[in-house]
Image: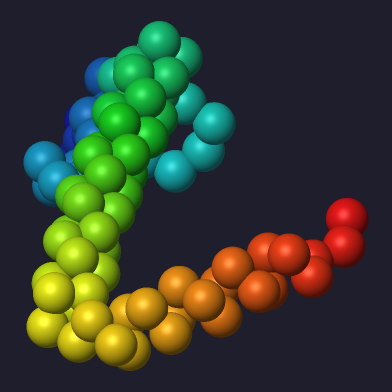
Length: 88
């Protein structure tokens, strides 16, 4: 077998680097279970980042209320008015 033919056919190995993903319907391991696990991990990571973001947002709102109580009260009143006039 010639050197340029080596690596083709039955014993062909994947030449991607360790961080690259295989494209297509199946995961790099060839298992649908691994693809589902990766999707769950991505979803869990997204939920964790979202929880951190919402926690920081609430802290910022609380700080704003302490620093500018008059503006915060006016903002609450405007929000209450919007909620009272909202139609389903």
